[in-house]
Figure 1 (cartoon, rainbow, N blue to C red):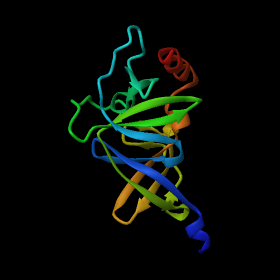
Figure 2 (tube, helix red, strand yellow; figure 1 turned 90 degrees about the vertical axis):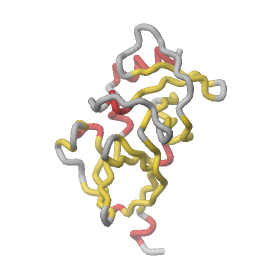
Figure 3 (cartoon, rainbow, N blue to C red; figure 1 turned 180 degrees about the vertical axis):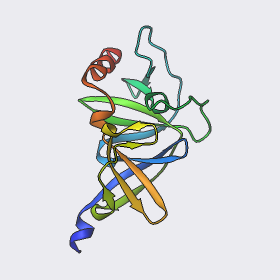
Length: 156
């Protein structure tokens, strides 16, 4: 095994609008079809509600709303990626979850100041893979500390 093979990042690739994003596979618990979401009164705008996922009350966030993209009706390919953040599970609604890939470290470039409508703080880097550009999200910065506390209050 060469040095570059050892320095790969495994990510779950998902789609929002026309862009592909990646989150580290070690932060992903599962990928689910969108199920009934129970709206929680007085929750932040970016929180769509909660689901009961195998006995765990899980807050659900629509990443389109979070990133300032127009909302879209849920489609056949719409998925919910369950991620682990700050000792809690959060469901991220995305347009589609495409695949799992290994990204060599040398293909990852630092985050530009702004990529599309997503603020640079959310972005860990951009992976250039042959004909694909993949935006790598930093899940720890998708939500502010205050927003994480709001999510925790929704979680119960």
